[in-house]
Image 1 (cartoon, helix red, strand yellow):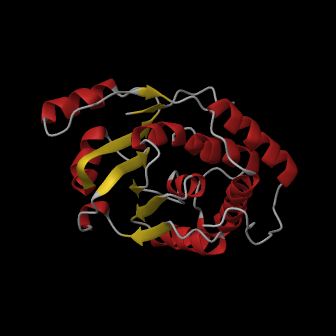
Image 2 (cartoon, rainbow, N blue to C red):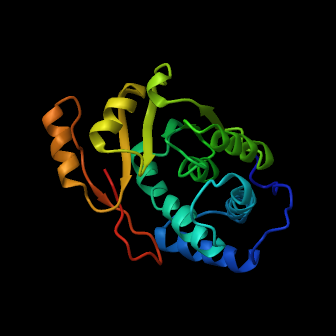
Length: 225
């Protein structure tokens, strides 16, 4: 992807300059350097989400400022953690229960060397992600309408989810899509102690660690298991 070429200009349903400045500030706090082209892509993604949300109810959050914080910046918080685990190498990532593309679309925008596939059981949501991939010219992003347990094993480096299911169910449904040496990565709120114990009792998977995710401007707790 040629990040020096800006995406197709769009009439944004918000003040683009203000939102761009906010994203740049958030990324600085996260120590996630993004150039202006990637910031533009994130804002164009947000604009598309706002438009589609009027008809297709992609998310219960409808205010642009809240969508920027609770969807875009929240998803950005996991990028440095995944990048550290992947040591800067190209990778295949499966986003399970992706909804409108969170965090999958954000991952694809931030890291063009990652091949990201979003999976969701709701067809209108995967149709939206396919639309975004085309409009924003993201060749490293694709979407599949399916239940994750019905897919052929995807052999991915990381299978990620954001508020998808319990750790036990996430592992049971999506674990077979992780290639040897790969990881499941679940974005959660508070560290889910009961879920981690249930996963340990099940025995097939173990928790490697729990990392606190700091989301700028958000007081609620976030972590990555």
